[in-house]
Image (cartoon, rainbow, N blue to C red; front, side):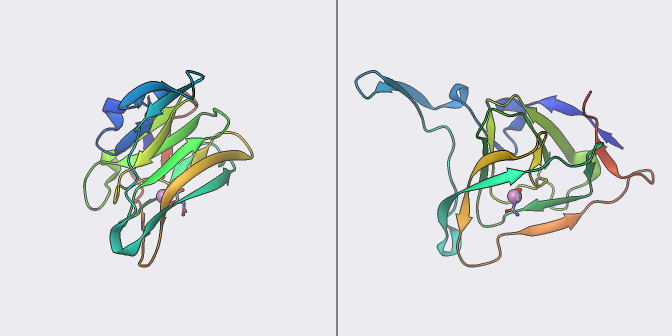
Length: 169
Ligand SMILES: NC(=O)N[C@@H](O)C(=O)O
Ligand code: NI
């Protein structure tokens, strides 16, 4: 099964979380004597469950072999997780519609144009970071705290084949 890769847009991604970009701010205004524009309240961080707190980390990703195989998914039941490219690099996103157990037919794949990051909502199934270039740094905002914040699940083969991303198109 080949998964079509769609351009990332706020509407298409809405069931899974938020797109992080200057175009998705809830407000926008000048600060610092007009020298800076604040793109305000772009995305919300959900990290407080079970005594958790938000943290900022950096993930340095390495491209996976092509064609990219989607063999598993994961989710974070106690908090959201945000990924923002630190060098304007494109990256791939794979999520599953709101079913409890992700089914292959419910998978959705997107590509960020590099100016966009994403926040996966709490408990939203997603594939771990999929980068397209070596030494690819992403700023991560997610939860640190007690309790298990990671569920992983293997995906079945479809028609005997591993699910792959239809990328590059
Ligand atoms: N495991 C980990 O911290 N990374 C994943 O959550 C991911 O979504 O890349
Ligand atoms: Ni994750």
